Image 1 (cartoon, rainbow, N blue to C red):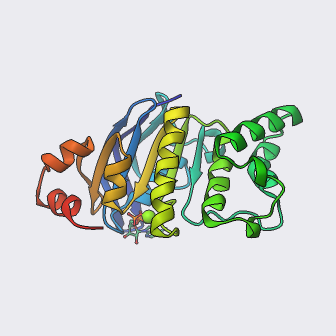
Image 2 (cartoon, rainbow, N blue to C red; image 1 turned 60 degrees about the vertical axis):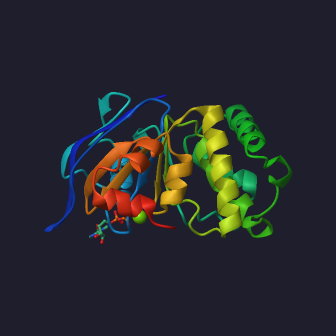
Length: 238
Ligand code: ADP
Ligand code: MG
């Protein structure tokens, strides 16, 4: 496993500065939630960690190694997005092992990792189905399956539940937390939903306008907000 350290990270798109010097230190195995209003830079930061965006300034380190110039495939991470775009013409099993095949993993390794992931996610009975034959929650689990078969050092989630209905969202929060308790993989989870942040995080990072306003446990952020923004954002109903 590996921690993630972000130091003085800057991001600009042309003349538009969207991250103004972000410092976040995430310990090995921690579940950290980045929360903040739409447009504050959460996805940009996550994509920089994944290597999908260049770093304008500062450093991103994974497992103690600066990865600013490493391509995504060489970073030991797996990302789960909101629109989990499964391949419609591939079965659940084929969807889950696609990345392993690209990596040219041996067939017995693929089979074993698929089985383990399917058991973890309760997907064993669905491996031969197609995405259209699954419920929303099952599809979301397949999307997570694609990430966990790779046994990455770090999971990155970008609002993975925002397309699900309220009831399913609550259930999936629980499943993602249980998965983390089992695998203990360092996780960075982005949401604009403060209730999701409060219920899931070991540590919350509250962002606004490209800055970090506060980092703390849910209790610290709730009980002792650093400023009016944090108090208002965390205290408001979702
Ligand atoms: P969040 O995920 O918190 O909603 P984003 O990281 O998506 O926020 O966006 C932060 C800011 O960067 C926004 O102002 C957005 O319009 C801008 N932005 C994001 N991606 C790009 C891009 N590829 N080109 C230009 N501006 C972008
Ligand atoms: Mg976003």
